[in-house]
Length: 145
Image (cartoon, one colour):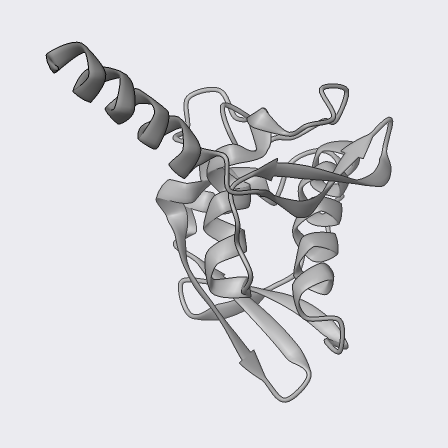
């Protein structure tokens, strides 16, 4: 009986994690590509944290991602994420200032991060006219790269 219970628990655990995949945008050689990450996420509020934590588990193993383990000497981007909100047709994604290394690197690095972030937002909120970053309560745009 104990063996059956252990086996049933393992099957239940595995089935709870295999409910589906969610679409995200990552990049390959600088171009945006659509792929999936494990889990079912249906809103901006759930897909962005999932993107920042599960991008390295994307179905397309050739996809580039910089959210998990992407910056030397910095925590993963999820640690700096503060939330998302929609105002009119603008999606505002908020971070604390420690996230700045993710948004102020080289032009190719910034493109990898921003194409994935913007593309994923548009998958889940297709009527958005703009995706705006907010860092410590101030709107931010990279003018260096």
